[in-house]
Image 1 (cartoon, one colour):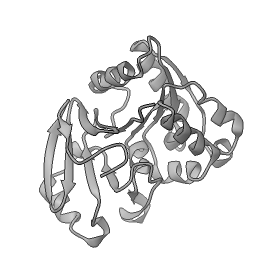
Image 2 (cartoon, one colour; image 1 turned 30 degrees about the vertical axis):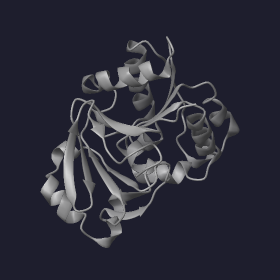
Image 3 (spheres, helix red, strand yellow; image 1 turned 60 degrees about the horizontal axis):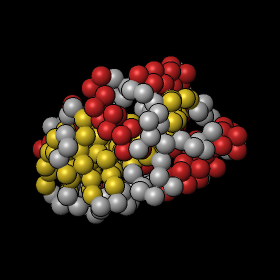
Length: 234
């Protein structure tokens, strides 16, 4: 089975993401792929609305979309929740709070089920907070954006979402500390993503993916290959 991960910069389930999401549905090879929407990161906002937005968006693209209401740690430890991922072709973590998402899913049966499904061929997608936690490390908003360990599903990678708001030269200066040595940092615009596959990576969506590595940066637009990056990291 081919393992694929899509890291999205935010603005999920909106018109700017349609082309990108059509592409990941095509990659499943199914006529009506099953898409599981996990709104954990939106727990302090409106997780039901986040899941509903995802269901409406993907259903409009021809998928069979449904929500998996993992809101708190007890949900992630509930085998019945993990079982809802059986047969999913795409598993999608929405945006919201990366710290809450990390605290709920790290080391849980739900995460084990997500990784097992991804290894078996389901596409794993995360937007904004969902993309942040999948990397090796992430910035924690509550600690002044200090860097701390994430889930390490994608090794040696850190994601900076909503990157259309950022100046690359200023970001590069911020990444000069030893905290970022050996990392590939992906600044991903809203409505855009980096699709990671076993043999390479590709920028998707309406914006750009800005790659920071070895003291330099470069932008990649939709459908451009991103060198030196795979689903296993850098």
